[in-house]
Image 1 (cartoon, rainbow, N blue to C red):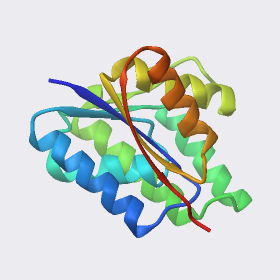
Image 2: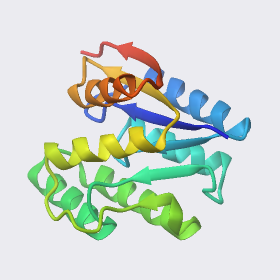
Image 3: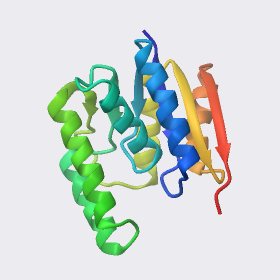
Length: 169
């Protein structure tokens, strides 16, 4: 069994990005391999959603968070209050991660000691996704720095990298 890290842009997406992510995840799980992702909006959300549809037991899913789920939920609700994302997006993500944890507590990998969510802890989370993966699959929109960070880390470790790039206005 191989674990495929799924990394992707959270700010912008399109129907094509979503279709590509879902098709990739479905193929991975149907052949008996698993996915590792970072629990963010858009690409991570699509990947986790498709994985749960294909594998309701969450046996083939690992989601790494930069903090505990409780802190992550509070952070996303705060970001919604600030207008960076919608309240619907925040609650949709929190619900998904809660359902994942209920289906398989080992599938949600929380960081128990981080208390701050910032670029540093997100990039640490990216490192954990790389560490747990045999292959890294990137869905990079508009040259996303976070996706590039993850892809670069995987390449530096000699892991296979598959990268799809998109430009969205």
